[in-house]
Length: 347
Ligand code: ASP
Image (cartoon, rainbow, N blue to C red; front, side, top):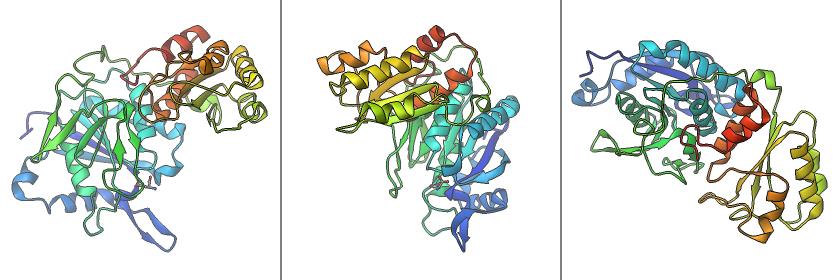
């Protein structure tokens, strides 16, 4: 079907879909390419014949994605950058636990990509009875063969989500991912991939390809902290995390539409961190909707302390964006400006 187009590249990083039982529980298994190609033979002949061709590559370390860290996101983006020219699209097979984190980070690193990068995973191993793995991989391959898709996306359980908007939402159900503040990019309909018009970056905002691959490792371990407020949280507790010398940025998960307790000591800690040049940002603890800092008097303290609004970004998007901006050689003012701007459809 796609004989005249370059093939796809499938990159296997680990995750449940490739796991096998071990005495210590499920762990990444070997020979996944052979296992996958065998499993694809079980598809109906017409379904199989219409699948795009693909080459296969495994990362040097296949892992449970709960161990993934920014260095892994960086290595994966570099791998994609090195290979993408020879392929018409990329599929990444990944564990579900941190799939949305890797997707958001790739979206920032591969800004402007003009072909599909589709991440997927599964809630069950490929060989387990009734597994969702083959369906998810098949769907990811079909969407990755669509030239109109020009961004990093996540395919799961029949739905295509913008990668930088996706979140894992279920621990066990097969429709494990959601996109709280942006509509689906596409869906499988009667076995065919359908992209919804007008929703993709290919239609607007994608701009020229401008991969940004800064060195996340140079930032040191965990340069950004995430602090979810709770009733009664103290300035001392926030300060212990935020005023640490190794911390260069923070994401606060505040109340509702952008509020915080009326606690001058707490606001003072935030203002001090801001004054020390740390990027202090906020989103809501509510998964749906945006914040509007200062709409309530209860949010005025955040504005006074110079906390920047993360608008309707997911925690994954806000955190990976902070790491990305901190790794780039930018002035503080440019970092702030870029945080407040939509770089790749994340806000
Ligand atoms: N712990 C697994 C992982 O993230 C879960 C999964 O893949 O569903 O690698």
